[in-house]
Image (cartoon, rainbow, N blue to C red):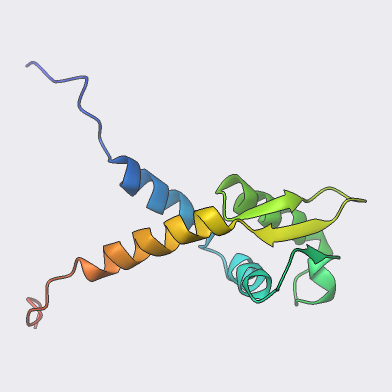
Length: 111
């Protein structure tokens, strides 16, 4: 059996939307994102003081969001600054809109 080893399993878009979805896949991370997206500028302070998130878990959630590219800034104390990464936010929005709009407007095939 011959297989094509050059064939990529997933498209770049599929991989990117999966990274964003994974980062957004926890309620604490969604709360952080919702808080930051409402800020007029970068937020200086401790997220755990304004959201119901334990201080011990905040840095891990911020790290995940930063690695996915959804936020930017310094997450190590004493430099505490968090911002939405506006460029990647736009990419994520467009990927999710495109993904959810791909469903054909037909009657449900399941019933």
